[in-house]
Amino acid sequence: EAQVTQNPRYLITVTGKKLTVTCSQNMNHEYMSWYRQDPGLGLRQIYYSMNVEVTDKGDVPEGYKVSRKEKRNFPLILESPSPNQTSLYFCASRRQGSNTGELFFGEGSRLTVL
Amino acid sequence: RKEVEQDPGPFNVPEGATVAFNCTYSNSASQSFFWYRQDCRKEPKLLMSVYSSGNEDGRFTAQLNRASQYISLLIRDSKLSDSATYLCVVGVSGNTPLVFGKGTRLSVIA
Image 1 (cartoon, one colour):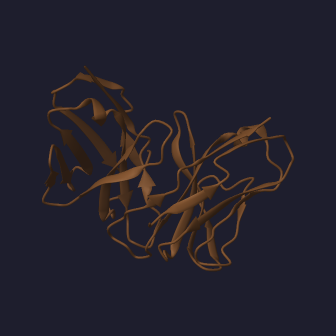
Image 2: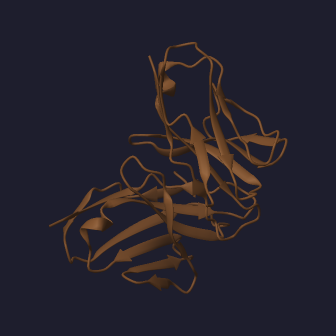
Image 3: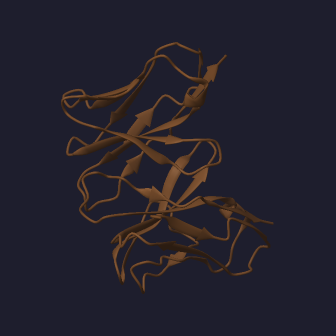
């Protein structure tokens, strides 16, 4: 089954404790992206990757890091989480150059930073 | 000016009603247009692409007006299961990130 898998789905952590949210896709997609979604602000892009070893900042990259060492994986790293990073996070992927535009999303990771 | 703007709603409509959402975009170089649907606390999913000539999928009709830079979604004979947030999405090319509107919330009431 074609899918994007994120882990963990739910996490409560404390300020400053490094964490990683993993994202994996099995569709051989070149393009992967991370979004956060907050009430009233919609989906905002954090980072995206056009292909292996290529990453770019989105609209709200501060406080986040990513890596793309393999095509299927695109982990999101919070080196020192802060309460303003409490949010619902989505990973997504699609074929590069795809004009169908279909982004396939993971089920989301709800993060709370105390 | 925001890149993609939508009326946030909520739109509260009775079952069977026809409801229309509009969305405007600011980048005249935009080439691809979509509507996504997002249920509460779930991931967004593609509802339909929007083509220049307009397109229909069952009770859903999408239209594009390039001159005025807006996209519309019409839902006929609303069902309770149509209750969701509808996201307008615009892309410049297949190699650039898609831009999402903040969404319009629809509640269909029995």
